[in-house]
Length: 442
Image 1: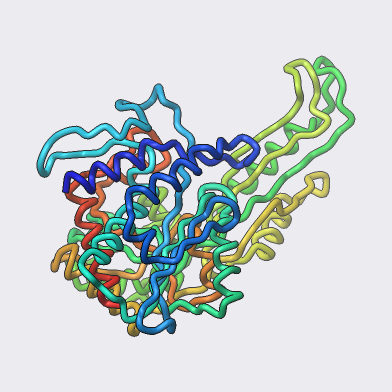
Image 2: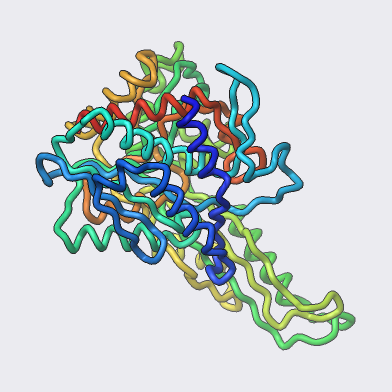
C-alpha cells in the first residue's frame, strides 16, 4: 500500500497542465512524467511494447494469447490549470492527510485523471509480477491533451486503425460509483457511460461602424448581441428521454420507492413527465434530458468609452442524442432571427454512438464492478454529459464505455476542475483491484 501511494503521489506532483493555446504549455513536465513512469514501473517497460504518439501521448501493448478483440484501458496525462490561492493544500504537493480509512490525497489530477492512469499502471505492474498472461492483447492508451483538443487520443486511434486493431472493449474515464444522483434511488450505482453528448461552440458576431460611446446608435452591436443571447436563453431545447437515459432509469427502477418505481417502470407513458421533473431538479439532471446551450465568452470594444465595431459571443452547446451540429445551428438561427447576427460553427462533433448495455463486453464490466466494488453496487447504463477522449475510439470499436472505478461523494465530484480536488486512499486502492480483475477477465 505505501509503495503504491508513494508512486501515485510522485506522479501527482508533476504539473502536466494543458492549455487550449498549446503555445502556452510547458512540455518539460510531460517529459518528466514519461521518465518517472518508466522508472517507477520497470516490469511494464520490460514486458510491454511502448511508443510515444503525437509527441507526448503514450501507447502500450501487452501481447496476449490472441490479438483479437483486445482490451483498451484509457486515461490522460494532462490536468486543467489551477488558481493556487483557492486551494486548502498546494495543488501539486500531493499532500496526504489522515490515516487508515480517513487517509486522503489532495492534488490536481487526483481524480481527473491521474487517479485512473496510475491505478491502471499499478494493476498492470502487479499483474505482471504475478505472472498473469492475458488471453487477449491489452492496450494502455494515455492521451496528453484530453482537456483541450484531444489530438493525442485521435492520433492513437489512427495508429491502431492503420494496424487493423479493433478493440472488443474500451474503457475510459466517466461515471463513478455514486449515491443519490438519481432522484429517489439511494442504492450505490455504478454509472457506466454508454455514450456521451456531442459538443460544439457557436460564434455569434455583430458588426457596426463604431465611434464614440457618447453618441451611440439606437441598437449598438453589444445590445443586438445581448438580445440574441437572451433569445437563446429564453428558448431552451426541448426535453426528452434519450435511449441511454431510458435504459438507466429502467435499470434503477426496481430500487426506487413507490410511487416513483411505477413511474420509472412505465416510461412509455411517463417519459414526458419524468423529463419535465428532471429539468427542474438541478443543472445535472436538466442536462440529462435536453441539449444545453450557454454563452461562455463575450468580447466587445477595447475601451470603456468606445463603441464596439465587433461584438462577439461564444455559445457552448452540448448535444443530446437526436440533435446534431447542423440541426442545433439551424435552430439557433431561427431563434435569434436577426440577419445582422452572424452565426458560425467554431467547432463541433455530434453525439457519440451508443454502446450496448447487453452482451459479453457489458457483462464483463458489470461483473467486475460487483466483484471488486461491492455486491450491493448496481451497474447501470449512463449518458455522459461531458466529452472525453473515448469518443475517438468509437471509430474502431462498438464497445466503448466510460467509467472510473472510484466511489465518489458529491463533494469530491464537485472538486473536479475546481479547487481542492482529492481522493480517499482506500477508494483509489480499490480501483486498482477493479483494473486487475478486468485484465484477468480478458
